[in-house]
Amino acid sequence: MEIVRSLEDVRNSIEGVSSIFIADKDGAVVCSVGDELRQRSAIIQSHRNVVEQASRLQMGGHKASMFFFDPTQLIILSFPSFCAFFLASHQTNTGQILHSRRQLEPIISEIRAVIATETPISLDYD
Amino acid sequence: MSSRRKVLLMGKSGSGKTSMRSIIFANYIARDCSRLGPTIEVEHAHVRFLGNLVLHLWDCGGQESFMENFLVSQKDQIFKNVQVLIYVFDVESREFEKDLRYYQSCLEALLQNSPKAQVFCLIHKMDLIEEDHREETFKKREADVLRYSELAARPHQVERENAVCQCFKSSIWDETLYKAWSTIVYKLVPNVGIMEEKLKKFAAILDADEIILFERATFLVIAHAETREHKDSHRFEKVSNIIKQFKLSCRCHFELESMHVKNSSFSAFIDTFTANTFIMVVLRDGNASVAATQLNIKLARPHFEKLE
Amino acid sequence: MLKQKALIQVLEQANTNEVTSAILFNKEGLLLGQSGEEVSPTWISSIWACFDRRDLNESIIVMDEGIIGIAPVANMLLALKASKKAEIGMVRAKLRAMAKYLEGPISMIERDV
Image (cartoon, rainbow over all chains, first blue to last red):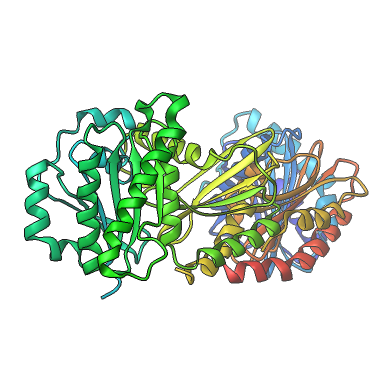
């Protein structure tokens, strides 16, 4: 499966999503489509802080975060060992983004498999 | 120049003025005082107290001959512009008659130079009298002091109900010292009645059991309002003492800004309030929100600042 | 002035339909008023701070066991906690309604400070 192409398909299927990127548990970007964001690593770091603070709420593990800014929305979906970041316009249907978890699951499994085989792949580090 | 108002603290040597001053103003607690030696000469301690009531404490040495000279040569200078005279009598003095005559001379000089001054007399070291005899002894001394005050006032034909406003019994070893000084301060604060009214309203809004205003430098109670009656009438002095001891035991040179104490049945907030006061809010609810109370204190502040 | 009792009465209105608590707190994490289940504002204000920008209007955090919704009210923060059975849309709607309702009175209090 072409990981990047599948991810691009997901992006195209939801109107208003400008970029999607996936990071591993160390915060390194594994895969990215759409507009290249300069603040990716800052966003990833902030998300890791959120997950840490949220763990103190004693409400189990983190599933998703949604941050609604004035012109944009940032949606983060947690998967085991990975997280997916969606940047979209504020009119974008948030529900659809949350729903895309189903489409992302196989993509992430594929990423996991690729990394496990230790095939050298150029990873995008910020 | 009425803002430079003087307070005179006077009395015979060894009557306890220096210890008293140290405890009230310089923040020593009682057991540190045994180390203070006899005061020589006039100690000119400028203590900023109640803000625009800038008071100087003139702790006149009180050694016999010094007192005699001092009354004669510097009389006018010392007794001019005096707002308050606090005169200290040692209850155990063997020469009470003599003490009273000294007092009379001072009072005469005062009335000549500052006819509007208020006079307070402290019968001090009451802890040395047996508890059963205390009230009786105090009443006797008080009567003598009042008598001599009248004598002092007579030559001046001063139109005052009474040259002496009030007599107090006091000791550095219990709350009576604070109570005396608090009462004195209360009489000196302008607008204290209005302040108490406003405090009462504030207490009602906050649903607080009690709100107390303390003077900043000395933690003497200036004003208070209670919505719920409290059994212990000595609580103010106890609170003052506790806070002071706490500040001293911290051994650091930082200024206290705020303190919050709570248990399951109450919350108390102490916060800097106006330039000259601390405010203490007591709430019956142990879960009262710190942020909400602080917010409300902040909102109330300007209303009280303009009263000063 | 802020009357804590009045504030709590307003917050209580959120506690229906799986919303188990509503709290109003400042950005330093200090609680102003709370209704329902006890929730510590400490972590919630930290979470908000991670992404706080002038244009951040709302945040929803979905955990395994429930949902947290956070919205600014004047210079303070309002948070709702809901069980995992709650619908995200419902939580958002309540959050926005309550924030809008409180915005007026709280900003009036803050203005005077």
